[in-house]
Length: 431
Image 1: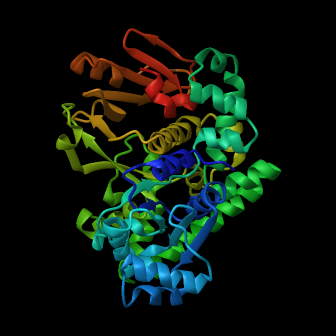
Image 2: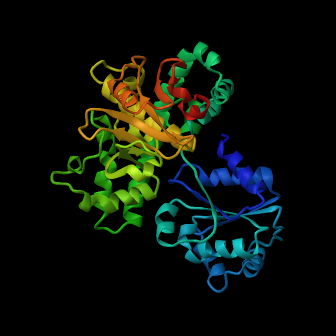
Image 3: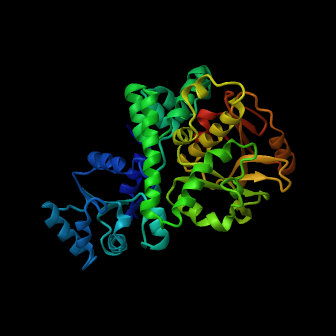
């Protein structure tokens, strides 16, 4: 399965100002596979060090972290000559060795010719405590909808979306809607996507998703103080519940009776640092930069992957493909928001907030900034796109451009662009 992040790695390799690259991302999003695939197609040799599975590798960095010493030790350990231009050095699970992390700065300072990529499942947590100096950085997310289409052999449809061919998309909207529902259930975790692309077995997909959820819970007890583990689990388990509510703002009291921010803030920070959840804060003022008007105490939480969201919420295939009328609105609304957040993140669209009035009477699902202005993004899960909140927002702020995404085909009325859900990751083509 090809990942679009390969292009970013190629840009990094060919950059004149290349630094050692740190790749962030939650466990099992495909970091190791991506780097191995990149090395196989762009280098003569890969030297891979996994500091989690082979602790003896840490000894290389214990005495001296100068590039000359480390390269010589690696050549001896791996019995291979390291050509700085033809060999990729891959430091996997680098958070397990602070000295290895410190060595990245040494390479950047005095040996820029070496190609070094470091990755780790808990870099967001570890690097937050232990700065590593000058590095390039990249975040890898679960597979996007276009990557899912390509893995499923739908390359032509994926190309239509990437090229922004709205006329072709209109003719294929029924097919795209069916594939979108498949993605809602399968999600973008590479192992689940691979299984679905090979067998189409949704039961096996769910088994894989549940195994991943169990693994994540196991990580809580391995990497967190015992006193904080129950809080992380309670917060993690509550994420789908909040998104199913009409008011999707995260409320600590919904985790447990009497729950407060002071009790759960460390747990929330850990989950966001590991990439398992995304925290989207509220703004009431839409002046640029939006971050200066962020209200940290008001936020919504999303999971890293929509397929894992469905697994955690115990959503079954028939709930998506033949839903009962009494659950369709709340469920589809939650899934549509989770999907849009995931696509925007994967596309590198930043920053992301949501807008709401102080009285809570109007709210826009997402708001970003482009060309020096705020851009509202309203999410609808069906073809009925009436939105009082968007009307209020446009009357009050008169934005140059606004986005409404739904199952409707592409079109626009003045500065309001109607963008089909499957195209939202290509929002830059829409305005």
